[in-house]
Amino acid sequence: MDNIKQQLKNGNTSLGVEFGSTRIKAVLLADTGELIAAGNFDWENDLVDGIWTYPLDKVIRGLQTAYAALKAAVAADYGVVLSRIGSIGISAMMHGYLAFDAAGGLLVPFRTWRNTITGPAAEKLTTEFHFNIPQRWSIAHLEQAIMNGESHVKDIAFLTTLSGYIHYLLTGKKVLGVGDASGMFPIDSAENDYCEAMVRKFDAMHASDRFPWKLRDILPMVLSAGQNAGFLTPEGAKLLDPDCDLLPGIPFCPPEGDAGTGMTATNSILPKTGNVSAGTSVFAMLVLEKPLSNVYTEIDMVTTPDGMPVAMVHCNNCTSDIDAYVKLFAQTLESFGVSVKKSEIYDKLYEKALCAEKDAGGIVTYNLFSGEPVLELAEGRPMMIRTPKANFSFENLCRSLVYSSFAALKIGMEILTDKEHVSIEKLLGHGGLFKTEGAAQKLMASALNVPVAVMASAAEGGAWGIAILAQYLRKKENNETLAGYLQNKVFADANIRIAMPDTESRAGFGKYLDRYMNGLKAADEACRIQ
Image 1 (cartoon, rainbow, N blue to C red):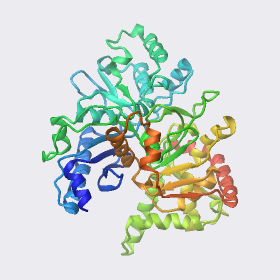
Image 2 (image 1 turned 180 degrees about the vertical axis):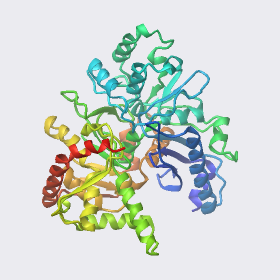
Image 3 (image 1 turned 120 degrees about the vertical axis):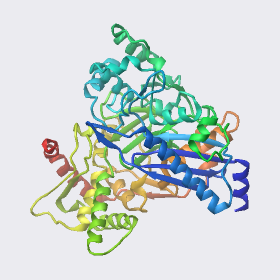
Image 4 (image 1 turned 120 degrees about the horizontal axis):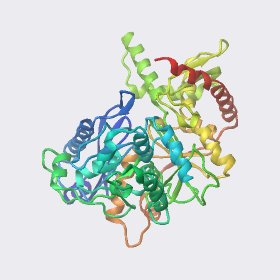
């Protein structure tokens, strides 16, 4: 207690704030990596005029609310008014489209990663670059806006991601970590910068449009882990802490995306390491030993926070359907006058999933709240299918919901393992799906046929990861790599639980996946329902 109090007073701490799909989380770490305090703000994206978006005023409110809760926890637990912090990092959902004019005005509502409205642009750029450009990427959104003839394009002065925007508000710097930048535009890992040949290609494609900007004029500058990305300005300090207790001048690490913070939080930085992040979306990332032999629309090529090439299988949908059923179960119990915490319902759902039949008894659920490019579905409709002979039990329903959360991921992963023969020693899991100890971890290991490991910090996820990147900025020694820092100073004594694939569960998931694939046409047809 006295040691942490002293660290708080001296500012020997690191603050990480991550803007996830359903929660904004702020964590404050001691120099040992120990969690001192945390604060949260729950939010949801809105479907407005066919666009998944978040209003920017809620971005600011969420930032301030999460920080205020963390600050209150520090005061309550340690009797210290938080005024000094050693370093800060901002992370957020990758991709999307935030376009601003020269005066800093938002030109169109924030278009998030969840939108599947850029198919023609993604296909065009993939062909032109001979490099997969997913629909989520910022450059796909920009190209689609150009193809649509949207009038705002000529007025763009700055294009960024959510983490880059918040970082700009707090520091005044238009920069981005290389991992997050790799979800805006392809990266040359040899240079840790945007691929110059593709930048020139894009500018040449639009020379006749006579825009008053070139691509590099509007993209953020790319920085690598460990580089200084600016300092908290007086205006930024007042924005983060309206009580004006927080002092300006705090250094920032480069803002990163949730992929980069996930890699950091699971020590998955070196080649042959990999991790899977499972929350509202689910994505697996494998650090490659060599480039892939082909271009696959199901596989994104991104980077680690220090620029190493990474193959990513990203699926838009993961736990949203589980969340919906938990809410339904809670309402059912309340109708009988029984009040149960949602956390207990989640635990029971995962517990019962482990007790179910290996193939979920003939029940198939589709967790498709939005489109799913891996499945070639432009829109999503959550649904359940069961045969008349299916064993429609609570346990089997629970197992089907969990299976559905990573069914699309399995399809994408097979490209890497079967076609590219990528070696996977184990996957490190983190995110909300792994909060209940052991359950989803065991089922995922069998489904993906690879050991899945979970660390004690798994539930903290990206907020903890970006706080570690902020700590690395401040505490790294001369020429100390990020991989070396993580291995020797952060995870040297990590508590890791590993689940191995189970033969019977593997076979059961195989049957489930066959049914899942056979019903995809029905899932597609269900999109006719408005």
